Length: 441
Image (cartoon, rainbow, N blue to C red; front, side, top):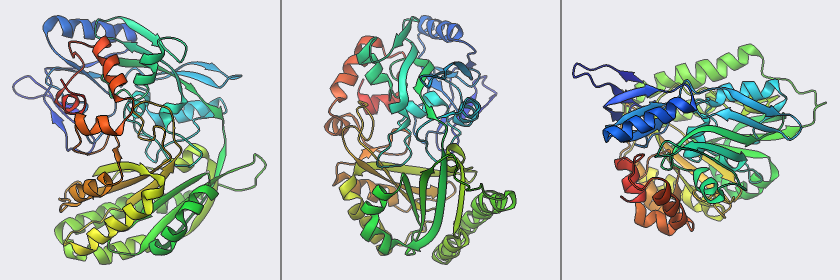
């Protein structure tokens, strides 16, 4: 979002409200040619350019005092090959728009995260993933990209064309160019049976590795200050499976009233009276009760998230997940901190994307959150110290404090990524302070 200021400069902030910028200009491009014009004009004026989608990153990736290039109007599906399942889509297309469009062609992305407000280019740039030990992040579905480079030229890349640029740009942090079009390898549309129930965290951790392998997609939501965890088990079903979606009244009750309106009220109470959080978490964890339903994959994967928060998420080796969760729980138990938001745990198979958090490593993801009106009480720093013992890799779109030196230790292809960046953007037209910390000057 952006608003005009008396000085003439707009003010932009991200969805969570924790990142604010006052760019020289906010420009919304409607075509690749308009993106080229913006890039060339900015370069001529000595200004830097940062692309932005829907602002769902918690980090400073989009923050700039130069030109903030919005891709919100660069949206829609441009080509569909039903036989191969290959789909081309403009870079600013929000995932919730893309999911509906793919469904009309009986196609789907093989995996999704639990939020669908991000643009496709933003989702892949930051390594948005999802869950499933036999699944991969969204960037693994990318088979081609169109980028506008720092000199205003357009480059098409794929595994067979400019392969090194392709490998770097699949999770590219917006550091290599502006992604104006993405080609995706989709799969035939599929349905999932969702089974959700509250259980004991201690008991689930004892068998979590087997649970992760037993289900297509496993997602855990542990409520701090309690031993309660909401376990979401999602599995594919055949086309003739008679399962039905949630009744409309139940969907409104669970996903609108309880998960958003009531949860917002719970967090406001927590912000005012932190001491009541343990009792509220007990009540909240039990209010989101057992349910089972079957629906289109994207409807099961994604849910509305209207309560604003800040988040830090790290990928750790899958074998380390129990130690990490127990260490977080122990830290919470020893400290006077109020955490109304659940801690989320997911799983993912290793992939070959250079800056993917799951690069060549089967991974578990642990995410800690805090309501946007509350301090984290030291949780985020403690969490980083815990995952550091297991070579945790930070989600690129979520809060972390790592810099170039440590990131180079965690990502084997980090030097290759930097080499591609040096070649494509030697003057750092697409740079900002956040990228300088991550990648160096």
